[in-house]
Image 1: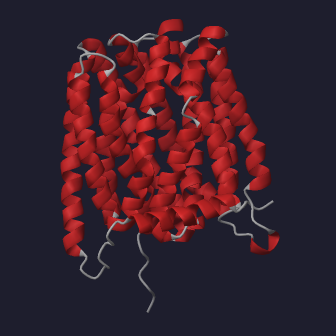
Image 2: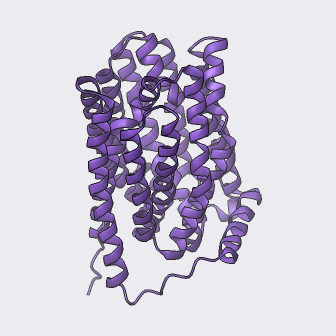
Image 3: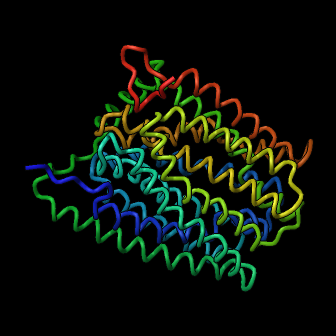
Length: 413
C-alpha cells in the first residue's frame, strides 16, 4: 500500500499566512509613506535620517530575545505576544502630536517585528520537508506578497484623499483584527497538542547556551560565516537608501503619493509572479544560484532608478526589485533553516537580524549625508555597487567542500 503523499502546504500554513496577510496589509499601507509622515510632523531631512537611525535601535533590543523566546515557548505563542506590541504602536502613530512621539511607536512596532519575524521563518521550516523547503518558502512568499499589491495604493489613496492619521486608523484596525486571530491560534495550539513536549521555561542560562551555539557557527568560517558577511554588506547598503526612495520620488521626481504606492504594488506583483520560480530554483539548482540572480536583479533595479526620469521607467525598476526579492527570499530562508538545528532556528533568525541591524545602524544617517553633501543619487549609487559586489562573493563562498557538497546548499557547477 502506497503512503499517502503529504500536501506541499498543510492547512495550518494556510491559516498562518492568512493572519500574516491581514496584519501586513496594514503595515504596507503606511510603510512606503512613513518618511513623508515623519516629514509632515515637522522633521527635516537630517531629522528623518536620525529618526530611522534611532528607530533601528529598538528592534536590536528585542530580536534575539524574540527569536529565542520562539524556540522556548512556541512559534505561535511568540507571534501572539509580539502582535500586542504592534497594536500599541498603531495607537501611538494615530495620536502622535510630533515626529518625536513616533520614536515611542517604533519601540512597540519593534516588539511585533522582533517576535513575529523569527517565528515566521522557523514555523514554515517546521511545517515543510527539507527537499521541498525552498518551494514552500516560495509559495508562502507568493501568497504573502499580496500585501504589497493591496496595501500601498490603498494607503496612498487614504493619505492623499483624507490624511495620514485616517490611514493609520484603518491600518491599525486591520492589524488589531489579525492580532486577535493570532491570539486565538496560540491558545488553540497550546490545548490541541498534548502529545508535544511542554515549552521549556525561559532562563538566562538557556539563552546564553543558544547564543553561544549560534555565535560558534558564525565564527567557524563556513557557510554561516559568509551568510553573515553578505547579509551585512547588503543590509548596510539597503539602509543607506531605502528610506530616501519616497523622498526622492516625491521631492525630486514629482511623483504623487498614489504613484509611489503603485510602484510598491508593481514590485509585489513581480514577487508574486516569480516566488514560485525562486523556490524551485533554490531546491533544484541550489540556494547559491537563487541568491546570485536575486542580488544581480537588485543591482539592475537601482541602475534603472538612477537613470530614470519618468514613472514608466521607475515601474521597470520596481519589476527588477520584485524579481530580486522573489529569488533571494526562498533561498535565504531555506539555507539558514538547513544549516541551523531546529531548536536554534528562532534564535538564529533573531540573532542575524540583530547583528546586521547593529552593523547597519548608522546607514540611514550616512545616506542622508551622501544626499546633502554630494547628490541625491549618491546613496542609490553606493547601494547599487554593493549589491553587484555581493554576486561574486556568493559564487566563491556559498559552497561546501567537495566531499560534503549538498545540492541544497551549492549549485551544480
